[in-house]
Amino acid sequence: MIRRTAQLYAALSLRGVTLVALVALAVSVMLALSRPIEMLVDGERVDTDVAPVTTASERAFVPLRSLADALGAETEVDPKSGEVDVVLGSQSLRVRVGDTHATVNGMPLTLKHAPFRVRGRVMISLDAVARALHVHAKYDARNARIEVMTPGIGQVPNPQAPPAQ
Image (cartoon, rainbow, N blue to C red; front, side, top):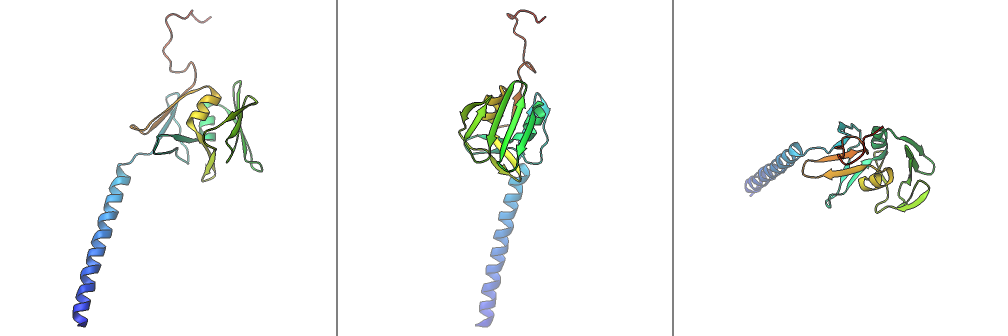
């Protein structure tokens, strides 16, 4: 009886180990094949310690300071209130972590999603950044790429427009 029980446990543990090994192998392959999201600003890669976050509905959230710095904006953070001010040229954006109410150039703007923190970095919707700072932004889920273009950079000139003086 004891020998039979030991054989049964040995068979079960071998099956369990095999199952765990197969699951670990599948997860490892999935992780190896997945690509982190690449963020480009005016064609230049932006490196950040916190990668952009995406949702199943293909919404992208980007680290605000990394994107603002790449755009050449000034960023100030008030650690007490959680407010973040971003100024790019004549455009200004003020957001608060956890709050959907923001301001653009002093005018109220309601965000679809409140900014949140990931490992200490403020993450904001790519759409909100595009609207507030007047940049063109898109998320390409198929190629795992976020592209942000500032006006006048990387755009084909309009042949109907008068020449710049």
